[in-house]
Image: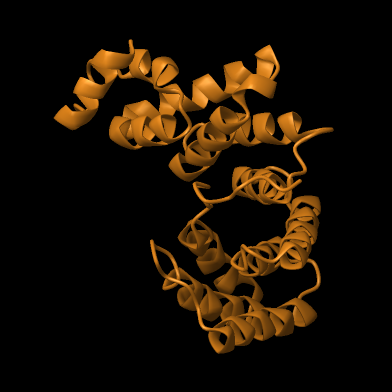
Length: 223
């Protein structure tokens, strides 16, 4: 049974933009095409934003053209995954997204965003058995300086906390601590949504930016 995806923290398309800028100068037309589509995809991000079917089809077809021009391009494969992942309520498109992310991983296995995207889509598909914990842990290990990856690791880790092994819990808490250094309020919001404030509140660092008073009061009632 697929798990509810209402509160998922998706990987932002903007996180791929910088890498595509570099590849555009190096590899030519297919990357230029992919870069143009990335700017369209970035406009879809944010609460309540969703592309029209026409815009979505245009982006997909443009990326397919880029894929044909450059068959072994991990950035294009990842963008195709992100485009299909946008159709959140369609399991078939989520499966296609997973296939593209897997292809991207084969081309650049050290990308924490790709690992986190695979975990994100697998969660939506309810495919959280087998090696899911390994996927989530690798994302955490490869992305210690990537806030977007930390959000996904903490969100999914806390969603499945009761099913996680001790090593995976350690990786999730490590991402939580790192995320707290940058944005404690955001980490607390994710933790509260998942019912894990008792785990998160003690990790708010004294030297970090102070959370909003409402969250400070909430932590006081949970710790």
